Length: 171
Length: 381
Image 1 (cartoon, helix red, strand yellow):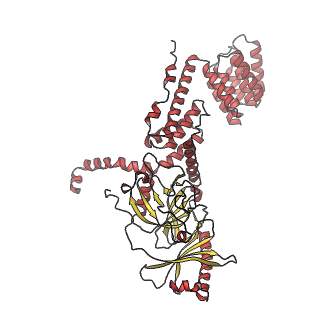
Image 2 (image 1 turned 60 degrees about the vertical axis):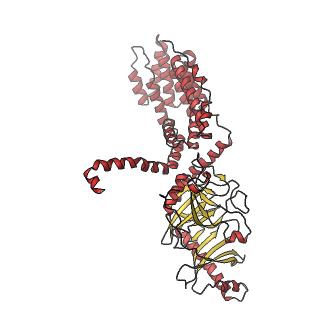
């Protein structure tokens, strides 16, 4: 359980660089988390979120991660869901919520969330869609080869039209 | 010739370099199953990226590997989010069966490495090799005999008859079970393409089969038709088929040895060698006692024994728990007084029900004149 949580933390930490209000020492909060001083860390964050006028998405995100460390996955899930609702363009909450679902075996929901996270950026959306289209095309060709490796005709017959739908990216 | 290479060592290196690809290719081909199962393992481990690389490499080296293409398709369908795209085509189901059988074999191979077939109580030490076809696992095993012990040499995935095991009739599309012998080799060039690299013929129907009025013929071990590496586990008309590279490797291993016994079993048991020796001693004592009783009794079967002239010093050289639904024991005797290998007696025993055995069938077989089993592999067909 613990190693996976740390893995989530590592992934969470590596995503995005939150901008904090100047008077909060992020390193202090991190070392509190590492030392298991989760209550103190939470208090500090709650105080900061209440008093800060700047973007609290990052702070709330950090808060959710602390709850994961503490094992309170329900609270963490609620916070990630709130973040997705309030900041739908931020990919990070989708990722971390997907990890929670994946750990619970809810793989289809996790996959949907990860796809939604990729979709927050139109360029990544285009890349992802085209990649999966290519995978699907390759899969269909492999299936055809499994049924008859020597019949090149059957491979050519697979529709290539879907690849023509690659959208042009705006600059 | 040697001087040439001494003077120009680069020439030697060059020629070796030319030979290397075919050496490597031979190694690759013998690694087909290893690589196939390894890719399946990689998929199972969740490492899709490595799995895709392995499968791309496998299908590049073995473009006829339908299983390889199928695994690749499965993986790519998953990656594209179409996990439900499994084909309902029965051909795919056949590939999955083959994969499952080969996977099971590879998984259990380590544990079974030291085990031997429980039915092969004794094989004549004149036979340097024994072939054992495990129809349940779709596997042909080649054992060598070393000091009365069977030593595993190699094993190959095989296909058997479409209709399963237990051949009775001509055209029933079944593979026979029993104790047979390889009695010939036909190179692929002399056969229809569907036999692939060639065929090793067997003596089905053997004397027991004929006694039981079983019909049919042409049960061979042979290669695979062009366009396929292996067929599905039940695809032949009764023959045991191997991939062409496997068949060729088997030929090389058998060399020019003739009369290789091939025991075909649809309900194999595997045991430790020492347990086998114990079982053998028990059955041997039991059969020998029954044989002695018959020879000494005034029962009319005594006539059989005396007609075939088993003398007092006769000994059993082959002893096999005969495969099949009926409990039977196969024993082959030679007379102590034989100088050459001219004469042996085959007996098929079945239990009397009160702990003894009686002879179902007894025949004498003159040993065939020695002949080359395998044609010189370099000779052109």
